[in-house]
Length: 324
Ligand code: PBG
Image (cartoon, rainbow, N blue to C red; front, top):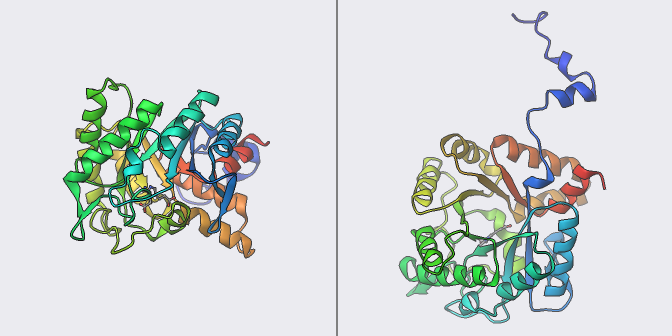
């Protein structure tokens, strides 16, 4: 039944009918706001991420309160410690920057879900996500540090931990450590398919976490690989992951779609720093409309199959959705 019987444009004539046939929804409840916390005072804007800041704990509390008022259900915290060392010691310090931040946030805004990133790259002097021996990233030695880091976070009150290091076996190791200490009910959101991407560059400026030698290709995934993402997800589920993440988002919509179709776990996608900054830069040059670029990319990520989206646009998107 081709044209003239079939006329798809009949259903695009008015805003009302377009709304009726709209297939994908983005609501504030789908958004997770990433935040950077530091020992420095006040807040410093991150040069390559306009409108994003490194926050002191009081500034963080204000930011979380604002996100809560907008209806955003969750934040994910990244810490920048005072000192970095070879072992990433700051990561497992019960009084470390993130541990302090968790306590402060849960004290002031207990309804806000606090997710924490489990990875030592912000804490190591070499900037790698694992312990280094003779220039090699040591997988199994790192598992213990990650488990202790996750444990101090939940002890401080974190609601969910999100390992982003890409060491093999880390979900299982963290699950075991949490269970052994009575935290059977704390969920793990695993960065299951995390690619070795150039789009993390602005984040690395924000967290001062660029690797000091080499790159992350021996642990993060090759952008060329699609089936391998399914293998990573399968393993993480076997090890006890409760939710799965794909990262970055926009260049990996096929991966989001594959995982959504094959696994029943809630699926998150991370619209990373470079995806955010790319839009900001184009807007600054007058090449793109910010609101439309933001909403179109977020809807695309939802359409591909993400249940929830980590995005630096969370507050702007929430304002737009709620018209405030
Ligand atoms: C690792 C981590 C990174 C990001 C989130 N967790 C950096 C990396 O892997 O180099 C990047 C997030 C972003 O670019 O917004 N702690």
